[in-house]
Length: 202
Image (cartoon, rainbow, N blue to C red; front, side, top):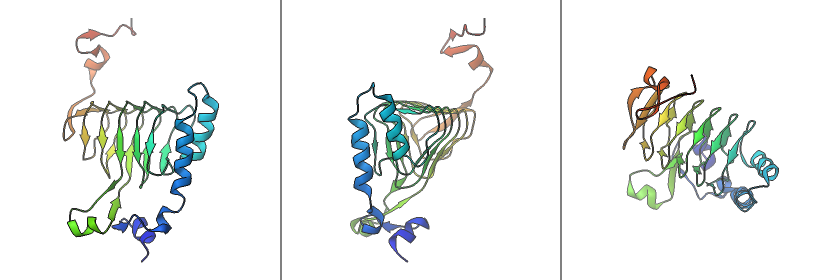
């Protein structure tokens, strides 16, 4: 079995195999171009995202700079997604982000990892697991999402969290490791921050 086949089968594989690395530098060149484009050149950035990402819907924006192992080649965006500055996609595996997601600064989506056994790391073995983020999810600043994680629709991940396991939909979760704190409930229709009341319903 080739390393490419091993990767596609979810097994550990040699990341430095030329058949896997193929056009990595070409993808990173597009990433470089995006990060060095002018903020006002909105159309150029939109065109680049269409070239760079595996899929990208309508009205998606990533603030520069952003980082990606494969230049976003394995990143799948729905519609109306906003990523603040310095988002990192370790996109050796697929990363799926649903419609209307909000991604704060310095968030890392990490699909790749190394085996624990020292001899395997010494010999350049890695593995990857896809990440899936549901619709209308808000991920706070400095969050780290680890391989294989799924985050359900409408959930909020608090700043600084390390997400090691799946998070269900319609909850607030935070911590290291990240855990569910409570469900989104009626209180959230009354208060928008601590004890400060919403006025948009009046």
